[in-house]
Image 1: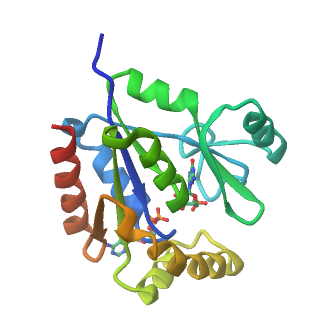
Image 2 (image 1 turned 135 degrees about the vertical axis):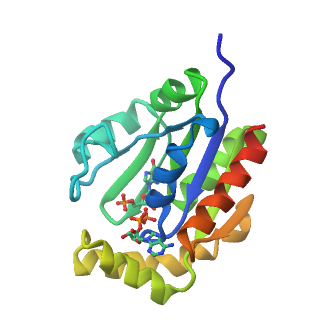
Length: 190
Ligand code: ADP
Ligand code: 5GP
């Protein structure tokens, strides 16, 4: 049987560039990554597809899964919007010998790290500044003004958790950030 994969947790304020970095890491076969598709109670944004970026559930479907203990962790990341990692998703990816890469919020990240200990590596990606973060959120062209405001407000609080992560990486120049994260992951999975 294939050896069970390890868990890599990436967290960052929304708009920092996590999805962009994860996309590049997923193209590196030597890292053997499998993306953990979370469930969310929010509707799809832009070109997002069910079962690719997220499992899109109605708020009722999400709550039923909470009651049925189907989540490894879940958080109400934004008021009225829940996100969570399903037990079966962790098993699907790690069971196939892939290393599971998770894009989850800071509280979820610290909970997963606590749960999996040495089998998990937590990485916090920092934006170069809050001004740059706001610019990236606007440049992405997918979020409403209200959603951008909520995300910026939350960023400062999220950054205050960064010292609790195993590693911190600043995403200033994209290629450099990707290479830093890649080297950290390589060291961990060796
Ligand atoms: P997140 O997944 O953290 O919410 P995204 O990956 O969607 O963030 O990135 C937000 C926006 O910033 C995107 O438009 C992306 O192309 C851009 N971006 C990501 N990294 C950089 C970087 N190093 N320099 C400039 N723009 C970046
Ligand atoms: P977005 O709406 O921009 O896709 O994601 C918003 C936030 O939800 C991001 O900070 C992301 O890391 C977080 N998130 C996505 N999936 C999960 C999850 O399964 N659990 C937790 N705790 N947070 C998640």
